[in-house]
Image 1 (cartoon, one colour):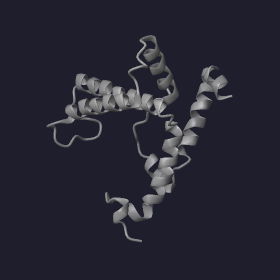
Image 2: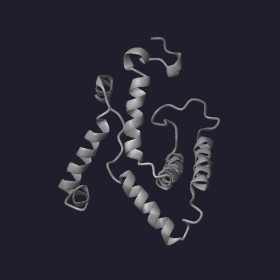
Image 3: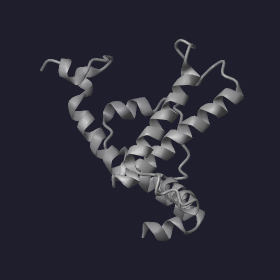
Image 4: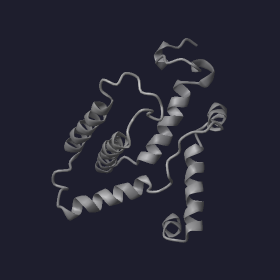
Length: 164
């Protein structure tokens, strides 16, 4: 049914995006609802992670690169791209949210490098057979248990440092 909706009208795709958002929000609690009322940056609903996986698979297949895109190689390539992201922040000190003072060129370079990281992450997950959206939902549920808002609010301590 979801596949038919993805190929359907823009109204159908909008319904699908709302359904996906509801699924993603399923782990959120009252604190997150309070925070979400503030103006926050949001991602566009498309492309989905599956769309990105499919685009990268086509790109790789067209070039016969699958032979080189094994988990270890993808991980090392992703780490290299993370290094390129780090290089953009190097020597700047603390950088405020929204990147004030960054030029459009610097922002675009960051977008390119973060995209490379995501592309490699998605392809690595594919090769390792990890369903990232579902893994994120499971991980966030675990994080809620490890970091209950009533215990950790405003603190950056690791969960092992909290006393019951």
